[in-house]
Image (cartoon, rainbow, N blue to C red; front, side, top):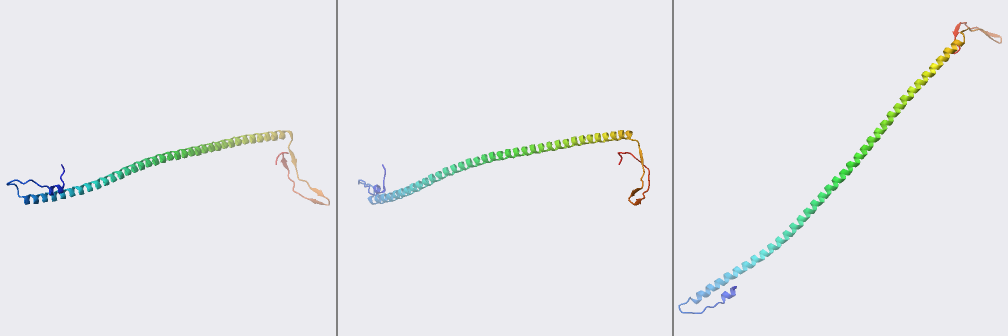
Length: 181
């Protein structure tokens, strides 16, 4: 059975002979009632504070949950950004490697073309030198064969008469081949 302060203050006892002093008992009951009333007020106050603390705790728990979810989301996003960055870096590196390979391949092809052109020029030079030698040899052969076919002639400068005047020149005797310069 629950006791309320009002129940204590209105409680009456039967009178018996040689019993307690009624005024003293009533005074004590009032004190107990007041004390009980104070305890009940304090209990109600503590219950209210407890309820507020529980509401604050629930609010903090909710905030904590939201914060944890936010942190988890941020971690997932940062992980996704990191993965995307790594993927993009791999693509960029792959593209750069392909471009570098293409540049190296083009440079090698250009180098091969240059070497081929140098080889062709050397071959043309050798061919030209051979043709020139052959031409010189054939001309020398022709000169030698013509030398044998034509005897050596001696030429001298003579006086030429042109109308009424004559011109004197020094006479020299030279041995000239028909094909010499």
